[in-house]
Image 1: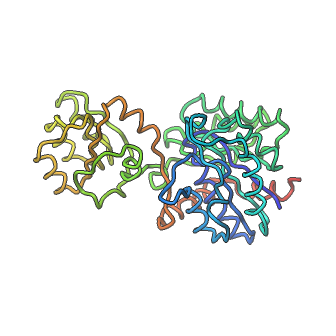
Image 2: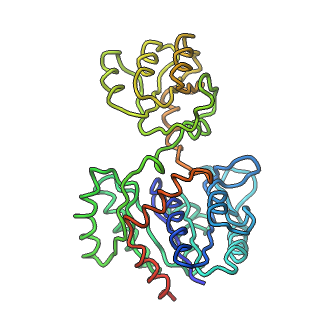
Image 3: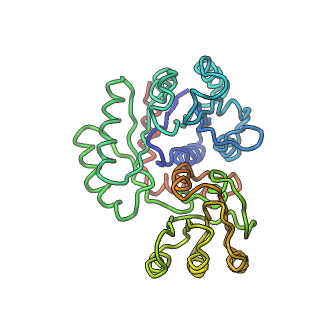
Length: 353
């Protein structure tokens, strides 16, 4: 049984890469398993990790969900009840169970490679213990992303870990040509292989209004049934009406964050391409705002945080594909087929000892 550990930077779409690659491997006739040793703590009722549900359904895995994702953590894990003293043994026992009968195991890394280093269960340590080859997935945002790719490839080599290659994922379309034409050759000169450059695609990258609500909480004041809308941009309404109109018209499928007392700005936002209004400070809006939002079928989320705290919390929002979202599942496979050298990945898996 061979294993490929998919690890990288936050927001790089590790699970989406795993989802697409798993489907492709199944098409090629391989029996594929999926394992997420350290989940980021985002769960639904019953304490089941969302990505585990997705992969179990899509791949038809016949193993318990709690074994697919045995450990969950958060940014304050040292203060949480219980401890992670037995986490390594729990992970390895679950991995032994989940991997039985599979030819290839895809292991989905934590939010970043260093998470839980203090407990000895960071992604790099686990990859060594499991004897896995590594597929790096990195979000390309600027030239520092290239530096990050070089650093991680070099560090993994020093750790004695085999690296199958690097995928740059969620790449803004204006940066795709530079990533392919400049970043790729520089990495190749250093002996590191680039296996794909995936452009940002809203179907799999943009969070939904519901995912914003999961993080923010609060109250939904309008269009409760439209929480599936995608949010592709954020605008903070801390400006005059004259200044705001330019930005509101320019951004599509956006979330607009503003105080509940800014009825003028809220009404203006509702006349543009807006996916959700997020009202801060616990201030209920004018009834005209709620009425117009219902007419436009735009959700309103009222939160009791100030604007700064709300923006900080929004950094925790990420997209989780649902098992019923066939379009996004197909896009994940399309990324592998269209933008990735998947044959090299299979060849590496086959030859890796």
